[in-house]
Image (tube, rainbow, N blue to C red; front, side):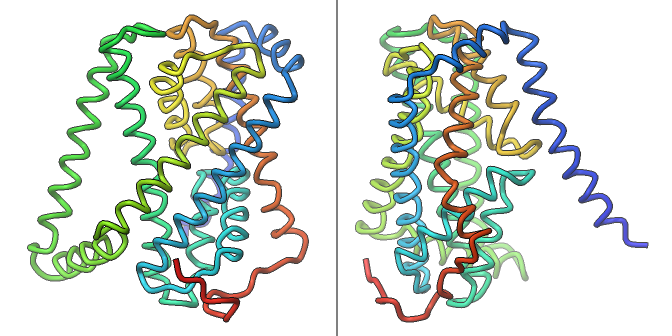
Length: 321
């Protein structure tokens, strides 16, 4: 008897349950009623600004994916990239684990270059975005540590920076040494090393990847800051740089739906460092989650409205960058 499908169903149900359980726990740990009042009185203008920022973030992310795919030899028109990215984000926001949309994006783009190449393009694109978010966090923490402006951070943040740097160093060394491994591991390492060189090698590629990743990260940080402002908390730029990346990185924990619960817990814990209340952090995080879901609703139209983008590689203007 194959128990793997049953295990997957159990894990999925568990992830669906974890999100509301964590939100309720955070609600009870802080002043949930105060958070609800802040959400109910949220400023619509700032929420619309957050939607706009997340919309630009989606377009820039789609362009980053298109650029990476093109470097790896895929043909991916911009219109197709945007449509697939909206669909992937909608699935990531609504399915347990937060990665189903990316898997779907890689699978649906496999016609040009094969599944391995399309998977590499999706993975490299996501890693580039998360790496820039980590860089923003390190820069923000360093800024606060040097200037003591906006918020005084606890000593554990220095340990976080040290661990982040150590992990980054280990990954770089592993990628460098992987081609020298024997057998299949060495061949896989060499193929990965070559693909990374294609996607990120050269001045033009580095510049484009950096600018696109800076743009997507800035949009994410601004969107959360706008949601905080909408619910009554004006975060200083130093707090946005230092604290918001930590809150957003909590969404990467694949144990709930789109990071719900973990993000709220992180926001409630970190907002007091910026001179705000834990309930204000909860309100800002819930507002951000709802705004994010609203911003990716075009993906639902693609999924349920019968619109299927043209397969990758079908001439629609071969769109060179």
